[in-house]
Amino acid sequence: MALPKATLPPLKRRAHRHEWQGVAVRLAMALGLIMLAFSLLWIDRAGLRDNVDGHLTFSDIIYFTMITVTTVGYGDIVPVTERARLIDAFAITPIRVFLWLIFLGTAFDFLFKRSWENLRMRNIQRQLSNHIILAGFGHSGRKALEELLAGGTDIKDVVVIDCEAEAIDTAREAGAATIRGDASRDEILTAVHVERASTVIVSAGRDDTSVLVVLTARHLAPNVRIAVAVRNADNESLARQAGADVVVNPVSFAGLLLATSSRGAHVADYIADLVTTEGKVALRERPATEDEIGRSLKDIRQGLAVRLHRDGQPLSPWDIAADRIEKGDLIMEIVPTASA
Picture 1 (cartoon, rainbow, N blue to C red):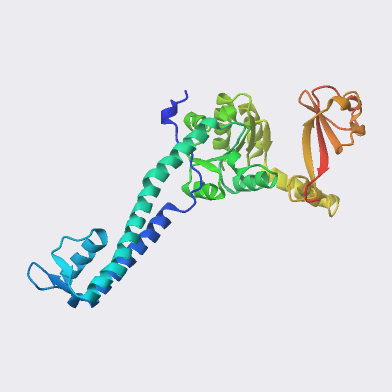
Picture 2 (cartoon, rainbow, N blue to C red; picture 1 turned 90 degrees about the vertical axis):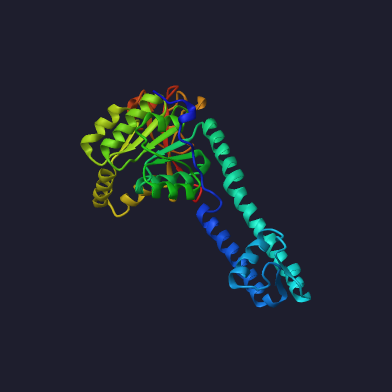
């Protein structure tokens, strides 16, 4: 059962600057300004007067420095010479102003800006629609993201789920929305609105986990397209039974590419070219248009038609059934890429 919206984990996106790095920079600047103020006051301590006991010590200068750079002072220690007053006016006062700007900037980042970012991300989370979910951000997941971006997908339309903090940080640096958690849990997939997603790409690293993620996603979103990577050929049928529309076995695919190299020096290169956006040709799947209905698959000229899908069954250009395209058929064709 899905959890109430109030308990859903929030999305995260890349910040303009790493939070702790920003804090460290501000802290270093503040300490540097305080040390500068202390040095000036210590060098010119003869121009100061202690109205309490008439004697200035090292700790008195530290005290006076902190009071002076944070407030206007209490009057117990005051500058009495002309040079001391000029130092206070043209050196210490600007330092005080800069310190307050640093403090206010830090407060803005950690209070107002962070609250605003959380509110903005929750608003994005509520409006997620037709997005792509990457469940698992290991090597395969990262390569999938690269191909999606190369193919024109907006990074704002990608949500990454992973249990590892390092993987989440990498995805967030790329600009994707992220949730750290187990993608096989209902509340995690509900948080990213899997029911409104266009595609779920599952690459959890373990076949049993990947199949469980597919089961959960299919249970929550009966109509979403699910693609999953499995390493063991015995688990391919399990993944399909769990609800996956596309099952990819990277080990088997690599073996197929190696085997095709025996059929020619360029066969494997051409197959690799087809599945990447960096090549000169690409595979495209689209529904048949009205003017194509009734024609033969061999007559299609938008691209080089290589397959037709009808009622879940693939048909080649040489099948008799492909001599007449019907309404609802899907045409797979080879088209040139933008680089070509």
